[in-house]
Image (cartoon, rainbow, N blue to C red; front, side):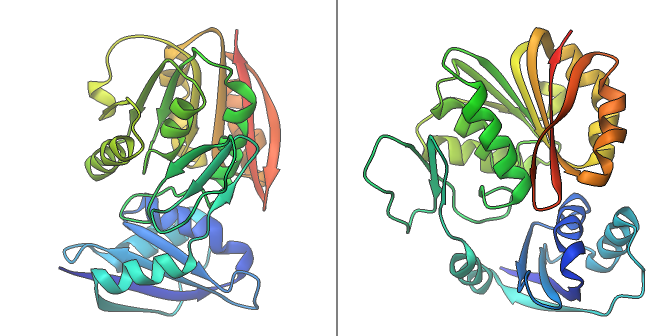
Length: 275
């Protein structure tokens, strides 16, 4: 089935933020080529019925980038996109986790293995914001915790929480396709996760809540996440540029003791405890 690929070049310092904004605006996948070069090349995949031009306009506005960026939109076969993704995706090895695709061979050892193939939902573990939350989960989880992943994408964070010993894991996303992908990835990794749209999430509170989205949605979600957090629960927020961290932290400070806990490639991780 044919899809449509939006391609453009941007300053490397803007590539990660624009990639996230395109995903938020409706792109199914985004890859970044030559991020260390003078110009980074972005390729964003859209459904054949999607509107790449409108998505780009919204993404540029959301990132504060000028609107007059040159771009192309071309049809692309799904198998060509997958082949390109495979060539760019390399495994991620952390202290307690190894994350790779089905065509990668994990190392021999005691690390928990996650299999996440690049596909039509965000999150293979390679993005800086995902790494920040994965490192947080490695530090925070010791076994038996109830975990909520809000904005699950591919489910990589929820699956990691299950692999790290969480007793209950719930994952929600506003994108029905992401809900389906997370279910499939959970089955592939032999873990039990309750996956749903936000409005279908069962009542209850959690010991650990993670949300890797974008700054403005995180600001809007502050009351929702606070309501789901037990007193003393730990919270991790990502998808936040270093320059946005203070603004987001200020909103959550009414209910959490929260501060910047980690950095990666210009992105910040906010971590806090529910009062």
